Amino acid sequence: MSNWRRRTLGIGVVLSVSVGLVACSATSATSVQESPNGRLIAVSGQTSDVQEQALAEGTVAWGRGDCMVVEAEETYLIVFPRGTTIGGSDEVILPDGYVISAGDEVGLGGGFHPVSTASELSATLGACLTEEVFWASGEVAE
Image 1 (spheres, rainbow, N blue to C red):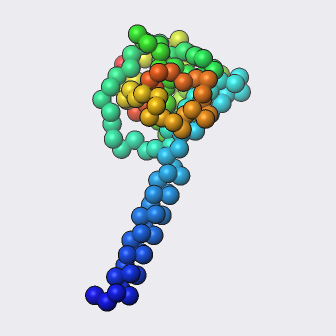
Image 2 (image 1 turned 30 degrees about the vertical axis):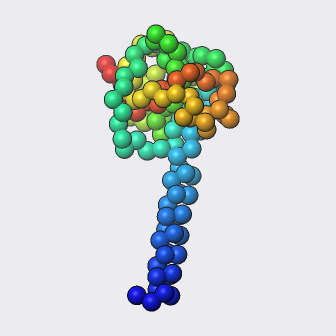
Image 3 (image 1 turned 90 degrees about the horizontal axis):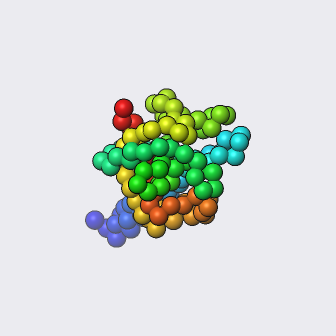
């Protein structure tokens, strides 16, 4: 293979990887949704192809900074799955249509992660952060 073709192929691979990385990072940012009453929920921008196996069981409530948390033995900020919305009455609607309101007893599927691994949350939800954050997958245990 000539040097010209190798360089062209190499540049093409680098550009493809760069475009892929930009596309992934553009869609994976966590967003914040606010209800008309000023309540906040964190929503992941990532599609959830990988299912984590943890279960957060407890009562959902509005925690520090008016963000939704799950209160169990400890309190955890919830990052809801992509497609979750918050309604005018502060109810959280999961992508499958399941509705969660403050005071509900829930069992949410997902994973616990130290807040240090979620640096993107610090800028937007600093007042809401808990020592560990629960990234919900959208599965609700009955």
